[in-house]
Length: 120
Image 1 (cartoon, rainbow, N blue to C red):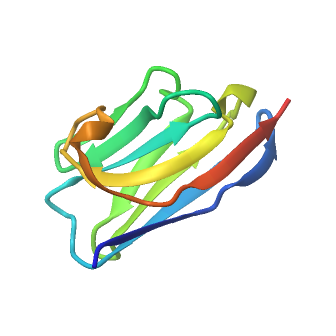
Image 2 (image 1 turned 135 degrees about the vertical axis):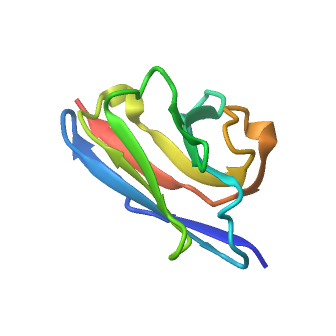
């Protein structure tokens, strides 16, 4: 049974940093892309970043502030978030799917999400 579990969310002031983690279990995902998406209240789920053997890719809104990484040996993925803004407030989801896609429909497995709240 595949399971993705996010952790590391919380409340932080604008300009601060947080590190999200995603623990994957049930199989190995070294041949897949692992990505982060987020969804704010009343808004659609949006792409944040993805990482695979092809490299990493970011949305324009987080480029230069967020860094995605993964440890295939531990089946873990991370999102280091810096210079956080109020507009980064959302529920963050980790997902496994296509290597470089920014479309939620290309992802097969999803976690339950972790809340990130940035106070201004």
